[in-house]
Image (cartoon, rainbow, N blue to C red; front, side, top):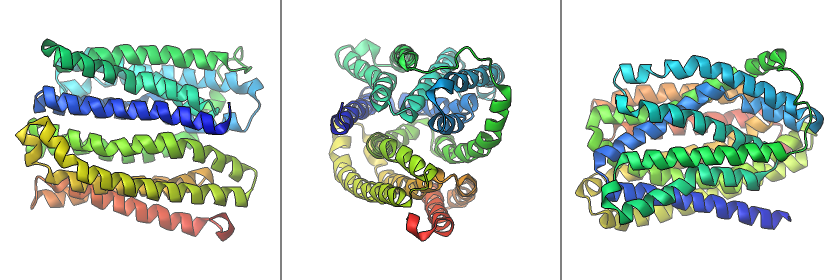
Length: 413
């Protein structure tokens, strides 16, 4: 299959996933109570954050090892990563009960939360491995069943059956579709011609990887902590009903990140890693400039489209609460744009193996967010969290850009 057709099919699947998630958040906002939309947002973001504790971001180390070695030993690497994940499951799944003991989530959510945490982690790791092994099309199928298919099912069911317009319908569909996605992903990995599967789990290799992965995990937890703490902080300031509006607006903004992952980042960062490994400054520079140009153009176009479309979309929802808090949207859109643009120097640093500046930037960004939001809360409670996100992502963008400029020889950028 030629590259152009592959990219078209990949974008079509990712686009379908994106459209499905868009439909889900809007139909959920239209048919469910704002408080249920808010609770869905808390569940989704907490599951998303919990994935990092089950995986430790070890896939970054595994991907580099796979790309730098023969397929004859890939099985040993993958089997070892599975062994690590099994150990992490035994530690962090029982620990997740603390979320319910301290009242962050209601107890009836616990079975759903546990099942989704496991299934989302499995499908996420499979998707990442398929991307690293240049099986982008199969990765897109896994992502579609994981994040898109069930959303379509929920939209159709809610539209035609008023009795099922509740959060449990969403959780049933999400769980079943994630299970199917996991089966598709496992089958795709099974079909890859690789060796080393009969080798024992290499714990020394895992320890070497953890020395690299844990510092990056700290960076990821700091960054994703911004998009987890913000929901809980906003709820504490404004209540679960208004959180429903916040979740809706963030869902619209995050659509761009999903598209960027599918159409830009997924295709350009692996060649940048390969160019760095082969010391090819010209190819790295070409890919980096392509990444920067496509990111700026798409961020600008999406932001303009979203800004003009959000008003009519809120009128269609016919829920006054969402229109009342529309002023939140512009600030969240700006924060999202700053975050996505910061991924340009991020991937430049990551591809060249410069992990420390990424870690410092993310940890600093979390500290800025906490400090700024606490300050803003004293004066503008309803806008404190959006203001905090804008301040944090602006600081991350500046730090990463400066570090990339400082650490990269001119011929490389």
